[in-house]
Image (cartoon, rainbow, N blue to C red; front, side, top):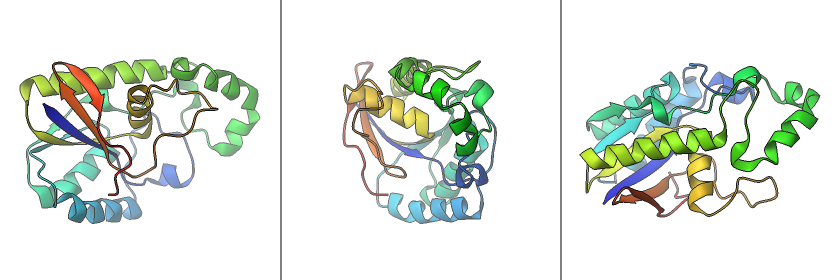
Amino acid sequence: MTTYFCMRHGLTDWNKASRIQGIQDTSLNDEGREMARKWAKTLAQGNFECIVTSSLDRAKETAAIINETLKVPMFEDSRLGEQDWGDWTGLDNTDLQKIKKQVKKQEYKGFEFRPPHGESRNDVLMRACDALIDFSEDHPDVAVLVVTHSCVLKSLVYALSGLEFMPNEPLPIKPYHLHRIECLDNELAPGQFNMEL
């Protein structure tokens, strides 16, 4: 059984400005780098044998800072990248208010939520599941730290919790926490979500 401990990258300037990043390749800001250094101290208490990261800079940088302490092999997988938000990439909360009806209509589609010219949450879920299952085939019986993105984490946790990603559902995930997912016989199963980092 491969055990994944999944987390989000550190803070970026776009995060602070509440701008949608999607696949836009942004870097950590100083606060985000400090977050990663702090997390490294906590994560050093675990027995991680490797790190898998999204190929976007903000995730890779978070993983690299943590790995200055962990010193384990690191792998990249673009399938763990953030959702492509298409035409909504770069929008902030003020912009989203202007298209509120359009956004709300999409939100009530659950996993089929799809920004114009972007990808759906279901697309994100499928590629993330494939990435974790494929990695476990080559790395059985190891503990893996996964550095990824908000929508990847939400898609996995909602699905593994039996939820439909609808606005009226209780939010099963807290920001900047660690989420354990098990992979056995090519199937993912929930472990423990929202562990302190």
